Image (tube, rainbow, N blue to C red; front, side):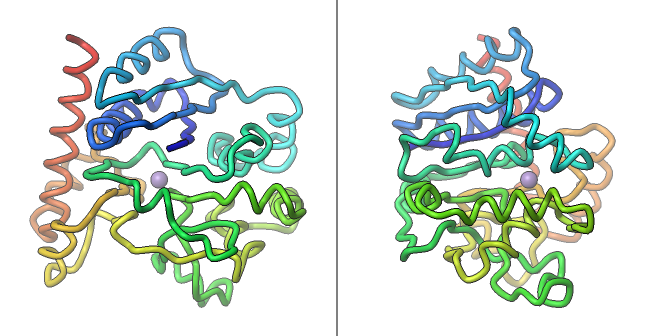
Length: 267
Ligand SMILES: [Mn+2]
């Protein structure tokens, strides 16, 4: 299974946790980490995770030259790594499909079914996300979260549509509230397959759904600005854990995964 991620040295701890949780629950993952700034030391530490699970490998792929320039021109306002998922076909043209994973996640089970999704002829597959009121803002009902994104590179290579994406984010009047995610949903409207929400679960869920969500979540995604690995957000998650059973369970699990990932690379 071909997976791509992108982050910088400052994101090492959550990235370790995400990759460790991916690898202990899955075998035969070929992970490419696309990066601009990743220290030699961070790479050494990350590479130790290859021993988690069976036959999981990591390759580091620098993003540079014209590709990086395009992002600088288009997207100076936003974090550049966010845009690397849209380079899947240019950086890895040999692949027919690839899974993009954000680094603010925890994997809890096998992802094979997600990876082998039937695109039904569409360019992407992802989980419906109503949290930013996309219907009201953009008139888009089937709006997805781009943090866990199955990419049909075989199709995207054959069409010119991805250029529309880059043109849109580069246009001076474009003010996407969620820059790349809005542009993805606008340009690829009706060309995105919706998949089971167990593959992109947010930590705060209504308590009446908690049993189902806790039992079924395959990938938990800490979408808000508050992050469970940050000391300044401990209080936020303490309060959230009192209100939401899913937050309590997922944050505890996340901290455990974080400790295990660190212990794994330290041994
Ligand atoms: Mn994210």
